[in-house]
Image (cartoon, rainbow, N blue to C red):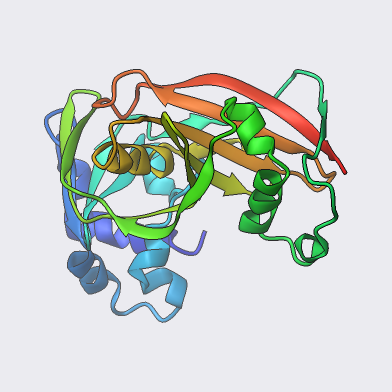
Length: 254
């Protein structure tokens, strides 16, 4: 991984491995990262956004993996390095594939052009698959794109983390009479993902509605199968309280 050198230098410069992670996370700023990596020539070795994108366990640099660490943003340009489990498994769905008849009575020609996550999710919504999975025919699309979190705090193990003004992005959010449904979508096989991608939007939208907030992970595979996992946080203040509620696979029949 190209950024292994960068992160080793960052850890050496700020003596991060000498920090007692059992007492507190290690705070790190974008300014510090830039300062450590300014002499590197490759973009992937000095660009903060790239260095801090660690969406799966395997995306982490070796020094994180070897020491059981992960990275979380706490503010715009500010991060903490934490010891613990930052990721959740996206386990293969073992139940049989359900044949789902689209509620549309006409073809969507434009949905067949391209292969983006949002496109597949939009088709699943247009076919009423999302409404069917969540058992809520009242859902309408209301959330999309980048937002910034309000202030909230939460626990990771014994460590209290405070965050505010962190950029989040959900692939789609739907509101019904009694619930809000947030979706993180992928168009390739994923076996784990950083909990933050589900947790931060969940906490963010909890601040804006009294309706129950649901969190889905959505994936469309190359063989045309739509897989949906529903997660919940049994303790909204606990990052690691994530729990799988249900998961199903579908083949949409037009």
